[in-house]
Image (cartoon, rainbow, N blue to C red; front, side):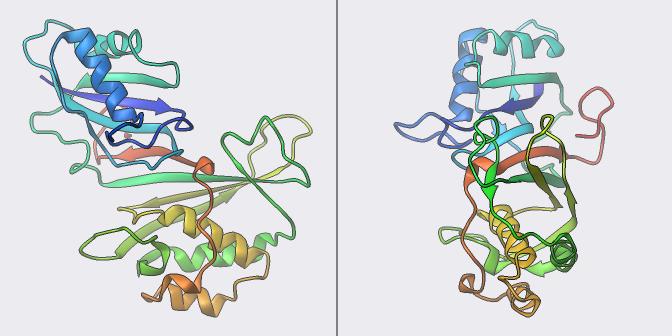
Length: 260
């Protein structure tokens, strides 16, 4: 049986998704829970490798589970009973034969979350990044419009990436200001949906939009960066804690009628 998992986790204490020597990872936590629950070693395949400190609300993983008599929807409960509290399986189901959570992904959506405040807000610091004023919404929207589409995003990737091409398609960039609690600070959620992302791409992209909104990054330089320009054209990589993987789209309803 091939099983798919819909996952949520707080990435604060993890070195990322992928198993690493001498560092806790989400993948290792899941594989250890699966061994404890089912007595067999199984390799978990994630839809993507979230980096150290990055969170997930809708990560997807798949793994083979053979020789175990359990309904696929109960796999979630079996794993949750053995997982640490900062990792949870929200849903589990039988996946199509040959389904691979990474290779089958069509598009992914990430959110970068920012709040504007003179002082740190303890209720936000774990999942958002504090930014200062000024912030011009019209300049931010203009920058987001430039980013949408197919571009060479070489300037939006940190060193250490070994990909065949840096061309990616960003289907949409939405900018919203969700309210987190009454009287809370102004917020900005940058939701980016694309067919794939380079190393640190969304964090650099969010920083570029903020710099444009603050008048620190001219539109001409952003256009140059989107044509395969160098990393030096853009500002710093934003901190990992503000980034969350929201959802993964496979082109068909994998979990109970939801197209995640």
